[in-house]
Length: 68
Image (cartoon, rainbow, N blue to C red; front, side, top):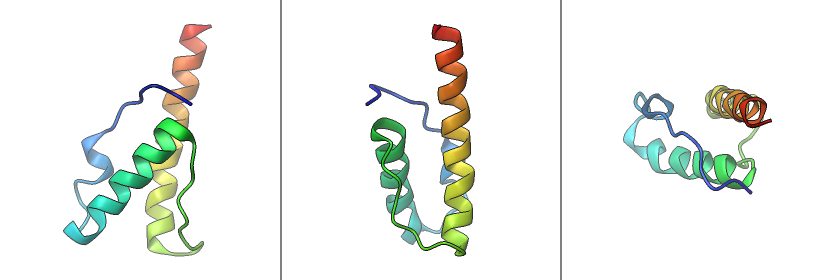
């Protein structure tokens, strides 16, 4: 479990209001606890989520490299 991560406004800025709360929750749960959201493969939501997850993962790897 991590204590923190960077939440970028661009994760949700272009989402319709109906999706923002879900994606905020997905992002926080993944960024802090590594919990992947239950989103169906092949959907636009999964495509968007994959972009967010890749960025969180890349930043985590950079942080770990700097910390080592």
